[in-house]
Length: 130
Image 1 (cartoon, rainbow, N blue to C red):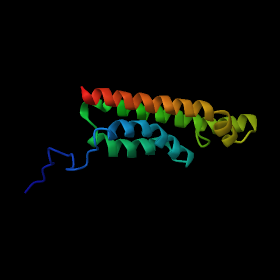
Image 2 (cartoon, rainbow, N blue to C red; image 1 turned 180 degrees about the horizontal axis):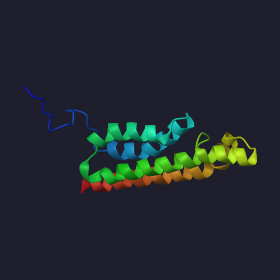
Image 3 (tube, helix red, strand yellow; image 1 turned 90 degrees about the horizontal axis):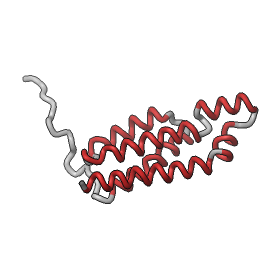
Image 4 (cartoon, one colour; image 1 turned 90 degrees about the vertical axis):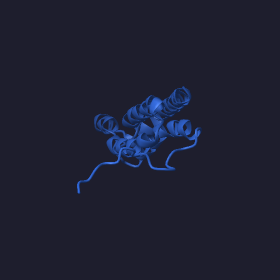
């Protein structure tokens, strides 16, 4: 016999409750940033988050997840001490990368994470209901 791929790849019981999708979108940018603080490249985080959430995400609300992921990625590469930006700043100024990223950039990073998560959550909420 030949192997045939299943037509329905969504696992039974793998979905979140209706309120879980906006909450997940709210937390996705923070997950990217937290992983970046631990030294993970956003490519790895994006592959894991997208691989886990995309199959169970409501099809009409995928834009909310995409926005949360892209914004989380951007804030991570701009605001964590292991990013190329911070390491270049360290080399050019002599200040440690963690000082530039966590002391100087933290207020902007936190504001951007709040806005990105909020927008992803609102977009997911409105589009999933439509």
